[in-house]
Length: 595
Image (cartoon, rainbow, N blue to C red; front, side, top):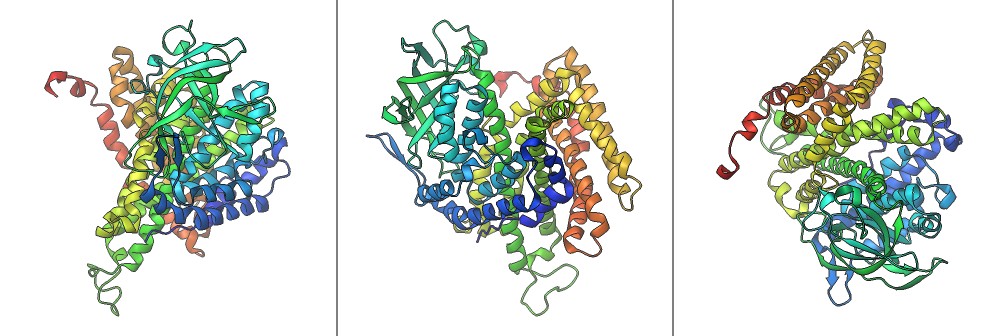
């Protein structure tokens, strides 16, 4: 059966040995009093909640799903979800990294991120309810009016209210310029909003007393396209100036989507029939405000797949050590048993090591990105903040796309390790595969992320941000290539860095002649850069682990997994470069009618 235990040892390795977060955070006035003991205590307690409360509800949510009462438009969440949320709120978890000025605990993002990982490992569908709420909090903190902040933020932070973002319409997903929802100004300063939204995660449920929706819509005089979109705060129940709840607003759930996975989350079709809302930010500047939530959501989706990799790897590794089947090709390894455990077989090792390499590489990368977010927000050094913002901008598409691609691959490998049992619902692995699949699609498909990386983040600034990350790699190589055992990593890391630079220049030149070359190269290009990022973090992990590998199995496993990544996964980059340089012609020469 599927199993999950918070991987505290590896989390602590990343936080304290690889990233050395404590002295970095202590330099920030907001976190000057923070110490390792508090960070570890928070993560350990979070691990208990996730493993003991959320994980047992994961299959329950998948089996039961959410239920819509078509008369009242109310949605009932699966058995135990509401009670688990009440425990979550009572323990103060929604406030973890929120601003103390509005009732938050003010802990850094790099402490919140392990909690996100564990919540998603234990129960992705459940974790989406507070996850989207935190995104709404961030958008309102950045762009809300003082009245909105005063009234709404404390409720979101304490968890008594939850939040959503309402972007997508039946005819309009990525291309928000086609959006049709309308907002009519009222004499009292509010707006009446009419339209239909689809695919709204956590759009209606019974877990909180109110839901605040962030809705994109057009004002009557709005210009066409994306320059004419405004953002509105639309509550499920109208809110008085004192924060009290009033009448039901005319935003309702018309239907629940029937989905491949994440059954425990209510994915809603939302209907707005003159629903009362208030403007967030400036008129016609709604995308600026919404992108705060969207970028946070893209990082959050990466955490969803990181969590799924963790639970899938734990479950398949345990199964491989327990399941006996066949004999080792080099002779029996368990002669006292009828057969050997399947972990003796090389291809089972390949699958497990692939899961482990992507999982632990993703964890190191994701926690480093969270640390960059803390530096960008809280560092007293302006140059440090600027550099961290550049890294967040450059690498957010890779967090979203590369990690979610890896998450789907790793859950699939987990199902393969379990064989027939992996395909059977009671073992839990097939649910991880189904849940993982959406992560490659929502919050901007992975193709959109690839176009964003190559078009905006690399070619858009002449490669300045990419060069900055490359300088970090070069600095690491220069500092450590002479250390014992490091040459096998630093040589290949230097090689992939050079190839990324050369390929970037090649695509840039081709794109100036024909923009379709950028579209043809984008997905493979993101994967190429993603491998460079993972090679960097695996080299860093190897550098920390090598001196201790002979005496401690934890560090030996780290070094051996680094070797596996470099020898079995990184070579994919050769194929990616060949595909990139094959150009767009082979993709576009066939007439559309012949498909």
